[in-house]
Length: 53
Image (spheres, rainbow, N blue to C red):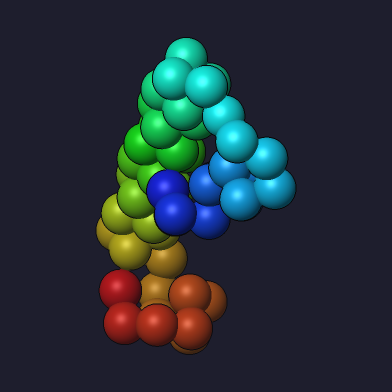
């Protein structure tokens, strides 16, 4: 997930502060995604998820 958050960097150069903020955001959104995925693995069944839980 974090790599997908770097699209703004490709469109224009970012300064050091903006780069740090984007990196912080990317790590947090990646962590949130992983937490939700882990909860779904525990709470849902394979048919609902479409993957092995």
